[in-house]
Image (tube, rainbow, N blue to C red):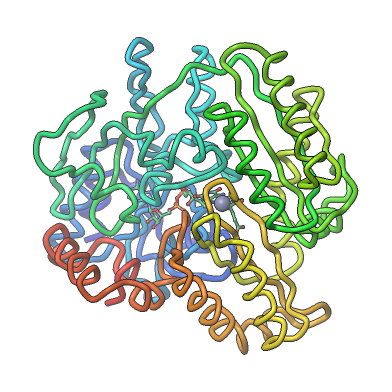
Amino acid sequence: MVAALRAAVGEAQVLIGGDLSAFEQDWRKRLRGRALAVVRPRDTEEVAAVLRTCAAHGVPLVPQGGNTGLVGGSTPDESGTQVLLSLSRMNRVREVDEANLSLTVEAGCVLQTVQETAQARGLLLPLSLGAEGSCTIGGNLATNAGGTQVLRYGNARELCLGIEVVTARGEIWNGLTGLRKDNAGYDLRDLYIGSEGTLGVITAATLKLYPQPAATLTALAACETLAQAVALLQLAQARAGSALTGFEVMNAFSLALVRKHFPHLRHPLPASPWTVLIELSDAESEAHARDVLERLLETAMEDGLAGDAAVAETLSQSHDMWHLRETITLAQMEEGLNIKHDIALPVSRIPAFCEATDAALQQAFPGVRLVNFGHLGDGNLHYNLQAPEGADSAAWLREFEPRVSRSVYAAVTAAGGSISAEHGIGSAKCEELVRSKSPVALGLMRTLKQALDPSGILNPGRVLAP
Ligand code: FAD
Ligand code: 2HG
Ligand code: ZN
């Protein structure tokens, strides 16, 4: 088996033994697995050869891009029997088609590098997330990543025109296309997007590009309640229309954690129960964007939706505002092990949901600390929790995490929400998936898995529990 892998990708690209922690440990440091081998193919043909080898030996395989996933989907289990397939060497830009507003890249390309490739041509790849300096296009598509511009441009799925996939049997499906319309048969592309490495290995993708906006402006606004933040969102949508490209929310405790662990970061507004980050992108001019944004914030303050607001005057001030928002995940890590709930709800139900769930959690788990932030414009909250002040986080999580998460997910399902808005299911949420989906939906998912990966070698134990 190992000899066949070495023949497929070259001896130096099959890593066995030594320090493989970068591949075997997940980003949140919640899981530490052991790989049979880490295999690093250079191109699609090599990926296909690796898949054929694994299929012939019935050996399971875990695809990995940047290993920034948050649900335990990209690291091997502890058995030492799974091959870790790293796509990181497949990082070539294959084509930029400026007239078609598209580009084709290999799966291991780092998102930020692809953004920069588009930017160098005056174009925009509107996929943006805190992990963009290390996550890859393959991982973004395998998880159907969201991020901070979904409100205007959609999830990774909406930005993808075509993909190239290696199947569980090791065949290559070239579905790369720059077409915006193609109804010829079932949509195989959309089957693989969001399948978290359980149906096939994505090796390349053609992505949509947009013209760069003439100006992008950022502002922060302070709200007393989440209901005010939702009303501000409605106002922003009415005033700015498609120019509204970001609408994020952060509770006071998330920013307090940023203040505590990253004291050098600048906070333009004093602490308030909720801080909203608004981003407007304008095709016309900065003056036009500024006019719309300032008038919007004036109205919000007159109507009592916001108590205070600050508009970034420079690009660097705008970056500072985004930095506060994107540092929350790191600040939570610094504070200790934590519980994540990446949930989606109809925006209209968010204030009542949070009021009721916050109160229920405080009553059942006194002192629990709520780190509630996220993409309010998409109805997506990161309804995260930190153990009570002074508690041993690991011990607290061992005792309470299952009950805490159960009560949050029960409330989410009752409110018509989703238990995974953007991070996926991985190994962390398999049981919850079974609770939250109907037997018919689960049956269809199992039928698909059986059809596309009959031996069950692709990322077993992820998404669908064995
Ligand atoms: P990995 O972590 O390597 O893998 C993720 C999953 O995809 C695994 O199941 C893996 O098996 C599979 N996979 C990876 N590559 C392939 C491939 N080529 N073919 C088939 N399957 C593959 N996510 C969001 O949606 N929105 C955010 O705003 C966001 N912000 C984040 C901020 C931080 C600080 C961090 C650490 C993470 C954040 N994430 C966010 C989660 C994560 O970055 C995304 O899920 C990202 O898309 C994962 O990309 P990756 O290359 O790191 O994938
Ligand atoms: C974000 O929006 C990411 O910043 C990470 O999705 C969220 O840390 C989290 O839970
Ligand atoms: Zn997010």
